[in-house]
Structures are given as C-alpha cells and as structure tokens.
Length: 227
Image (tube, rainbow, N blue to C red; front, side, top):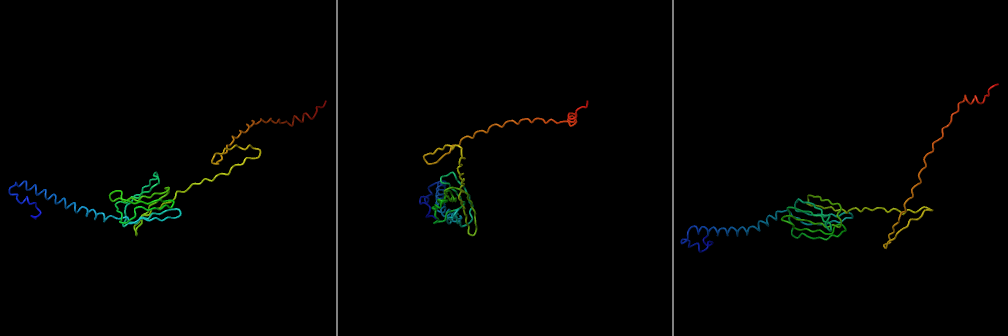
C-alpha cells in the first residue's frame, strides 16, 4: 500500500495533519475516478448486449403488394409513422429499446414499382428506425408474429380511379353542327350551342255551357193550339 502513496507523504511528520488528510483524500478521489472510467465502457457494452436486436430485413415483392419482414431476436415495442407529405413518401417504424445486430444491412434497394429503398439506423439511444421510401403511399399495415419473432409491414398500391369517356353525340339530321376548336396538341373541344326555349303554351279556352232543353216545353211547341 505504501508503494501507491506518493513519496512526499512519507515525510509528513514535518507537515500538519490537515494537509496530510487533504492530500490523501485527493489521491483517493483520483483513484476512484480512474476506476469508474475504466469500468464504465464495459458496463455500457454489457447493457447493450442485453437489448433485443434487429437481426435482418428482407422484402417480398408480389403482384399488388410488397411485404417487408423485420426479423427480431425478441419481441420489441414499435411505432408506425407515415409521412405522405415527403418526397418520396416515407413510412417509419421505430423500435425501442433495441439495437442493431452486427453485420445487418443498413440500406437495401428494392425498386419494384411500389417500394424504392429500405434504410435502417440508430437515431437515438437504444432507438432503431427503419425507413421505407415508397413510390406512392397507399394502404399499409404492420403485424407482429411470434416463433419466430417478426414484424411484417404490408404495403398495397393505391387504386387508380378511371373514368370512362363518353362517346361523342352526333347531331341529328337538319341540325346545325356545333363549332369546334383544336389546340396544338391535337385535343378537340366542342362548343355546344344554347338550346332555344320552347314556345309558351296557350291558356286553355273555357268550354261553352250546354243548354238543356225541357221536354214539356218542346212538346208544347210541336202541338199547335186548336182554334
């Protein structure tokens, strides 16, 4: 123990006890700080080794959907965040607490018409984010599985809405053909003519009352008085 104490402390008989105590305390503090700095990296490494890891990511491209399979060493809590305003659109999956397994790919190109690229990285302490860049964000769903532990992201294409074009209306015989305009691209615009208003209907005429004849009076007319 005496070999670790500085040599100037051995002649402490000529110094006051207070100075000797302060010197010993300063020396002990330096030894404790050095020991803590040596043991700290090993404790951090041991804690990181106990975190569940993301072992790998693979994609499966189908006709109308794409699946992203994220393999885990154990169940990990995750959060699904969509950012359709970005260009290109992105879908984020945040795993916490988690770590990335050594040798795992951090970038993967897909380009299957729906999913462009997959990126994986550490964004904060024990937080791993998987970023999916998509061509056009449609419907999506995340599902967790056990045995093996996986999180599957299912991406579907956004359905296209098609409006059937109506056939052009041919004018009847004797009607004037409406004029048309044609631009430089070959698109033709037909100008429709306003329809003429129908003539106003005439008011109904009142019917004449039918005069009813009295049979007695008619009989008196037919029989002349006898002189």
